[in-house]
Length: 346
Ligand SMILES: Nc1nc2c(ncn2[C@@H]2O[C@H](COP(=O)(O)OP(=O)(O)OP(=O)(O)O)[C@@H](O)[C@H]2O)c(=O)[nH]1
Ligand SMILES: [Mg+2]
Image 1 (cartoon, helix red, strand yellow):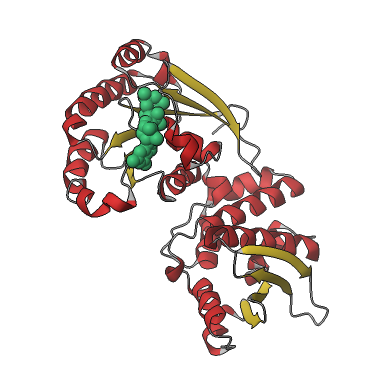
Image 2 (cartoon, rainbow, N blue to C red):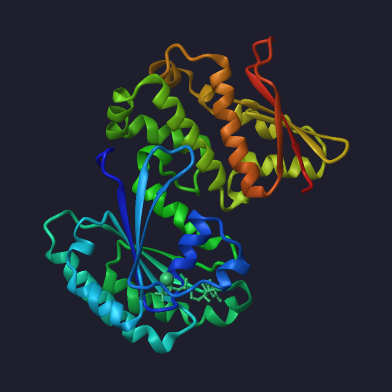
């Protein structure tokens, strides 16, 4: 994607599907009380956003879903012409409206097919899948998937979301990670964090090409942003081995050298009194010195710590832990560990 042109995301769905709420929760951090008082969108609400740490502009077109507005949108082909991504939102709790949504989406798809630009990425949110209604709605979900996925195309990524859990925010993060793979290092959450990151970096020629074009500083800020988001994105904590090591050590303050052998003592955690966890973390980039030398030949130790801090910061946000400050940047004995203190209770 051209760096100069902002990414254009269009979000569509029937009235009251929850489109504006999803956007306000993610981009403007509105709380639930405010979201419950949200007004219907009149025609179109267009906003430009800049994500923290990422010097990319995103323009989001929120298309009001009331009937008269839908009619108007479908007459304006230009709305969809240059979109990089289209998010289709379905209110999963209103299956009686699925047919209306199918009709609306089909017309949009037709407009997309007519355009001469490459096809946008398509995302599907089955929204209002609130935790308290999850059991009941899980029976509707297969039907919803069968109704909408073949229509939008099997390559469409779909999410089950609600503003009453962190699912809507996370789904938005995935959308952005998908749009900016060079920033987020698109990684599969099933794989180990560090390994997959390196594989992505090493095997992705496109990415390497881009990295070469970047200035030293720009690269560092991007890596930092990437790590921060990856940390934030660790949805299933149990699947990330070394992170679960931290959690288990946090529960029982036993140093387990064996389990972290594979990670070359990537992280050591010691539970201090007052629910403070001391973490000694090796910068993830130091796991692969060869790559580090190629990418950042003259890297300063404090920069490595900055990267590690970003990773930790993201993880702490995800785990809702208080992240204290980094107290030691690099140990003198060449162990290359950064020391952090994390408060376990908030
Ligand atoms: N139960 C539940 N309600 C939600 C959720 N997300 C949004 N809502 C509510 O749904 C109503 C409509 O939300 P909006 O965000 O205005 O919906 P919209 O799709 O933007 O509607 P239009 O602008 O008319 O197209 C509001 O009362 C929201 O509080 C959700 O995940 N669960
Ligand atoms: Mg709206």
